[in-house]
Structures are given as structure tokens and as C-alpha cells.
Image 1 (cartoon, rainbow, N blue to C red):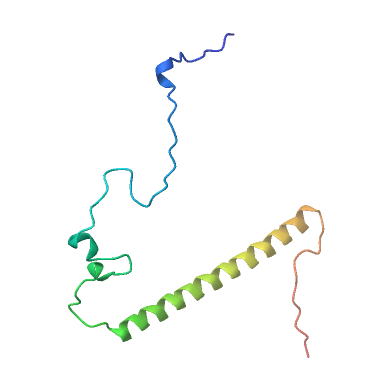
Image 2 (cartoon, rainbow, N blue to C red; image 1 turned 180 degrees about the horizontal axis):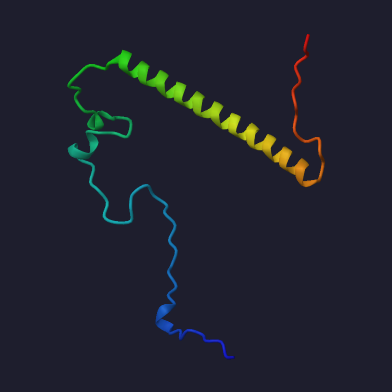
Length: 112
């Protein structure tokens, strides 16, 4: 059986010239420094600020943080419990599959 190879033309292979960036400006036209571009510097974030309609509700934010922490702790505890349970079940299953008879733990309470 012959293997089929795709027909490749020379127009599919193009070599691109790599030009490293040496300046902070993009390779397009350079901006002229003027009053519009010098108003905001990199450290000035005032143009991203939004005016707040209401003041920050600290109590609500802290309650949300406590709820998120409680959810995270509960999820972690459930995950640990699940991992331990699966490991115990696997250990019991391995014991049974080896043919042993004393795999199940029987708790006996002393009488009298």
C-alpha cells in the first residue's frame, strides 16, 4: 500500500525576517510628546478611577470575606475527609483481593 503525501507548493513556505525590538516605542510612527500624552504618566492611575456613588461598606465586605474563608475551610476539610476515606477503602479492597480474611475491623465493646 502506498502512503499518500500532500502536494506541497513553494508558495506555502515563507521565511520571515526577525527584527528584535530595541526601543520602547512600537515599530509604527513615533508619537510627538505633547500636552495630551504628557498628562498621564505610567504611575498616574487617575484616568482609571471611577467616582464612587456610595462609600465602601466595610461590614459587608468583611462578612463576605468570612463567608468565603468558611467555604474554603469546609471545602478543604471535605476534600481531606474524602481522600482519607478513599485511601481506607482502597486498603480494604487490596486486602480482600489478596485473599486475606481479617480485613474488616470489628470493634468489640467490653461487657460487664
